[in-house]
Image (cartoon, rainbow, N blue to C red):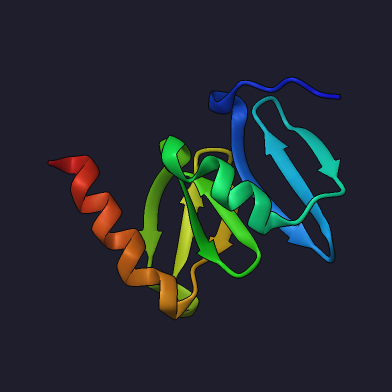
Amino acid sequence: MHIVELAEIIRCQSVNNYTHFYLAGQRELIISTTLKYYEELLSDYGFSRVHQSHIINLQYLTRFSKKEGGEAVLKDGSIVPVSSRKKEQLLNLLKGIKS
């Protein structure tokens, strides 16, 4: 069992039926639970599913790039694809944060 503060989670990535957690301090955890489970668990805490395989912590988002159809650039330097279906939802969330 791992206890992790929400603010430490940068992003989550689905690989098969496992979820990879990328944490502050370049730490990583691999959990044998699907990304869908964590999407439901984290959605009320500033996390957004931006792709079939990715959830990001919006606190770590530095910019959105239209390159390659859409990419989220995070504070740790990682670049996460944003699906065309999730792009508008992400942009609306960002507008809400700025207001």
